[in-house]
Image 1 (cartoon, rainbow, N blue to C red):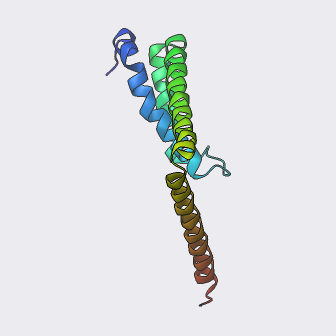
Image 2 (cartoon, helix red, strand yellow):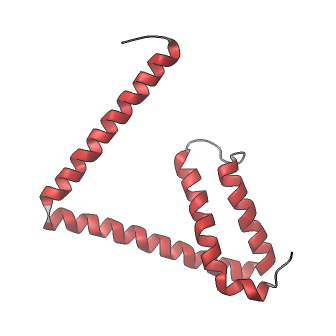
Image 3 (cartoon, helix red, strand yellow):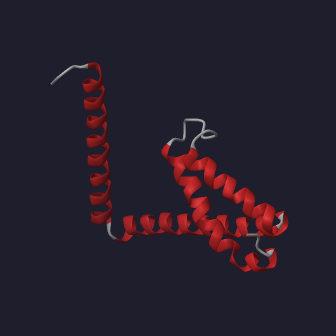
Length: 123
Protein backbone atom coordinates (compact mmCIF):
# COMPACT_ATOMS: atom_id res chain seq x y z
CA UNK A 1 0.00 0.00 0.00
CA UNK A 2 1.12 3.52 -0.62
CA UNK A 3 1.12 6.17 2.07
CA UNK A 4 0.38 9.82 1.83
CA UNK A 5 3.72 11.62 2.23
CA UNK A 6 2.07 14.25 4.43
CA UNK A 7 1.23 11.51 6.93
CA UNK A 8 4.85 10.30 7.08
CA UNK A 9 6.65 13.63 7.42
CA UNK A 10 6.04 14.07 11.19
CA UNK A 11 7.50 10.61 11.79
CA UNK A 12 10.52 10.83 9.48
CA UNK A 13 13.08 11.28 12.27
CA UNK A 14 11.64 8.32 14.16
CA UNK A 15 11.87 6.19 11.02
CA UNK A 16 15.31 7.36 9.89
CA UNK A 17 17.08 7.00 13.26
CA UNK A 18 17.07 3.17 13.58
CA UNK A 19 17.74 2.69 9.87
CA UNK A 20 20.71 5.05 10.01
CA UNK A 21 21.94 3.29 13.16
CA UNK A 22 21.82 -0.06 11.32
CA UNK A 23 23.92 1.40 8.51
CA UNK A 24 26.44 2.88 10.96
CA UNK A 25 26.74 -0.41 12.86
CA UNK A 26 27.25 -2.40 9.65
CA UNK A 27 29.95 0.05 8.55
CA UNK A 28 31.63 -0.07 11.98
CA UNK A 29 31.78 -3.88 11.92
CA UNK A 30 33.68 -3.94 8.64
CA UNK A 31 35.17 -0.48 8.06
CA UNK A 32 37.95 -1.69 5.76
CA UNK A 33 35.72 -3.74 3.45
CA UNK A 34 33.49 -2.53 0.65
CA UNK A 35 29.96 -2.62 2.06
CA UNK A 36 28.19 -2.24 -1.28
CA UNK A 37 27.29 -5.94 -1.46
CA UNK A 38 26.81 -6.42 2.27
CA UNK A 39 23.09 -6.94 2.95
CA UNK A 40 23.48 -5.55 6.47
CA UNK A 41 24.09 -2.11 4.99
CA UNK A 42 22.52 -2.46 1.54
CA UNK A 43 19.00 -3.20 2.78
CA UNK A 44 18.82 -0.22 5.16
CA UNK A 45 20.19 2.03 2.41
CA UNK A 46 17.46 0.81 0.07
CA UNK A 47 14.84 1.48 2.75
CA UNK A 48 16.18 5.01 3.23
CA UNK A 49 15.99 5.54 -0.54
CA UNK A 50 12.35 4.39 -0.57
CA UNK A 51 11.52 6.72 2.31
CA UNK A 52 13.24 9.59 0.50
CA UNK A 53 11.35 8.86 -2.71
CA UNK A 54 8.06 8.70 -0.82
CA UNK A 55 8.44 11.85 1.28
CA UNK A 56 10.44 14.07 -1.02
CA UNK A 57 14.11 14.93 -0.93
CA UNK A 58 13.81 18.24 0.90
CA UNK A 59 11.80 16.89 3.84
CA UNK A 60 13.94 13.76 3.98
CA UNK A 61 17.23 15.70 4.05
CA UNK A 62 15.92 18.01 6.76
CA UNK A 63 14.97 15.02 8.96
CA UNK A 64 18.20 13.17 8.11
CA UNK A 65 20.30 16.19 9.08
CA UNK A 66 18.41 16.45 12.37
CA UNK A 67 19.05 12.76 13.12
CA UNK A 68 22.76 13.21 12.38
CA UNK A 69 22.89 16.30 14.58
CA UNK A 70 21.35 14.36 17.48
CA UNK A 71 23.81 11.48 16.97
CA UNK A 72 26.70 13.93 17.02
CA UNK A 73 25.37 15.59 20.18
CA UNK A 74 25.05 12.24 21.96
CA UNK A 75 28.59 11.28 20.95
CA UNK A 76 29.98 14.61 22.11
CA UNK A 77 28.10 14.31 25.40
CA UNK A 78 29.55 10.83 26.02
CA UNK A 79 33.06 12.09 25.27
CA UNK A 80 32.60 15.03 27.61
CA UNK A 81 31.29 12.78 30.40
CA UNK A 82 34.32 10.51 30.05
CA UNK A 83 36.67 13.49 30.12
CA UNK A 84 34.99 14.96 33.19
CA UNK A 85 35.06 11.59 34.93
CA UNK A 86 38.80 11.41 34.31
CA UNK A 87 39.13 14.73 36.14
CA UNK A 88 36.61 14.18 38.94
CA UNK A 89 37.12 10.47 39.53
CA UNK A 90 40.54 9.39 38.24
CA UNK A 91 40.34 5.99 39.94
CA UNK A 92 37.21 5.02 38.00
CA UNK A 93 38.73 6.33 34.77
CA UNK A 94 41.89 4.30 35.37
CA UNK A 95 39.78 1.21 36.12
CA UNK A 96 37.92 1.68 32.84
CA UNK A 97 41.20 1.96 30.92
CA UNK A 98 42.55 -1.19 32.58
CA UNK A 99 39.36 -3.07 31.74
CA UNK A 100 39.57 -1.92 28.11
CA UNK A 101 43.24 -2.97 27.88
CA UNK A 102 42.43 -6.42 29.26
CA UNK A 103 39.63 -6.77 26.71
CA UNK A 104 41.99 -5.83 23.89
CA UNK A 105 44.56 -8.32 25.13
CA UNK A 106 41.98 -11.12 25.33
CA UNK A 107 40.64 -10.28 21.87
CA UNK A 108 44.16 -10.37 20.44
CA UNK A 109 44.82 -13.75 22.08
CA UNK A 110 41.57 -15.07 20.65
CA UNK A 111 42.53 -13.97 17.14
CA UNK A 112 45.92 -15.65 17.48
CA UNK A 113 44.31 -18.86 18.73
CA UNK A 114 41.82 -18.81 15.85
CA UNK A 115 44.63 -18.39 13.33
CA UNK A 116 46.54 -21.26 14.92
CA UNK A 117 43.47 -23.46 14.76
CA UNK A 118 42.92 -22.54 11.10
CA UNK A 119 46.36 -23.71 10.05
CA UNK A 120 46.21 -26.79 12.28
CA UNK A 121 48.81 -25.85 14.86
CA UNK A 122 48.27 -26.54 18.55
CA UNK A 123 49.60 -24.93 21.70
